[in-house]
Amino acid sequence: MPKPAEYIRGDQYLFNNKVLANDEVAEEKFLLRFEKQFNLKAGHVVAVAVDQSHDPRIYSVCSGEQDPYLQILFDLKEDGLLTPQLAKLKPGDSFYVSKPYGSFMPDAATPMWWIATGTGIAPFYAMMRSGFKAERLLHGSRYGSHFFFEREFKQAFKENYLRCQSGDDGIGDYFGRVTSYLENQEQLPTHNKYYLCGRALMVVEVRDLLISRGIPYGNIVSEIFF
Ligand SMILES: Cc1cc2nc3c(=O)[nH]c(=O)nc-3n(C[C@H](O)[C@H](O)[C@H](O)COP(=O)(O)OP(=O)(O)OC[C@H]3O[C@@H](n4cnc5c(N)ncnc54)[C@H](O)[C@@H]3O)c2cc1C
Image 1 (cartoon, rainbow, N blue to C red):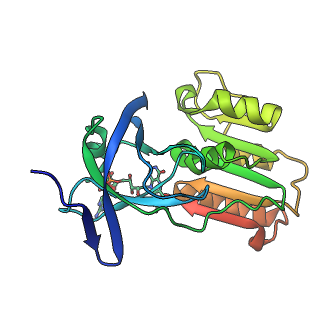
Image 2: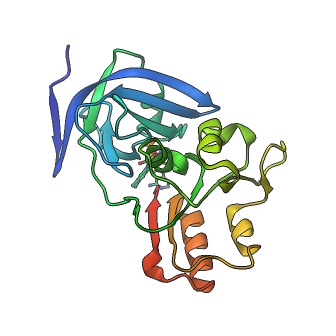
């Protein structure tokens, strides 16, 4: 039976959407592409559900403002509620997606540092594809295979794109976590804006470190994947 066109849960409004592609880009990491029903701004998120039986989950949009589709990049949580179902979606399947929204927006008037771990790279990919530039982009991961979109980032940001690898399969530009890279910088520009995206532990650790190095709290913008 076809799914209803809309799904309303509390103040969330989701629309029936169609999967265009769903690829496992690294072990348990999926890039899900679907129809663009509304325009978006780089940094936006969408709420997603596979059907009306559960609460929607939120994902950063991982495609540019001009791209003719939307994408999300997600971690499969084996024991999670939504991601095991998302991982099974095939082209042509329907699911529910909200209008893009959010406040993690780039500020093109101020030099920006973008700092991500894991799938937290998603909004920065959207920003890069939408024409925004980072003075520096740090992407932290344990595994070399998790530096998603590395070729495009390298091409766009050259030596200002740094893969910070904390594991040992040896392809990173910096060997250690993003926090240790930041700790080892003699100076961090205090007038820049610092955009942080990923799991809570990293975001809180980096935020505290930046504040201890004299970065005003107002120059730190965070998106936490909780
Ligand atoms: C603003 C925002 C943006 C986000 N963007 C992304 C993104 O781009 N990519 C991405 O991968 N994720 C993103 N997330 C996270 C995402 O929304 C989901 O939380 C994530 O995908 C897990 O969903 P799930 O339903 O599969 O797992 P869940 O069912 O939510 O479970 C997640 C984990 O928590 C455990 N758990 C669940 N309930 C409990 C409990 N009561 N006690 C202890 N443990 C529990 C589960 O066992 C599992 O390991 C974002 C979150 C936010 C808030």
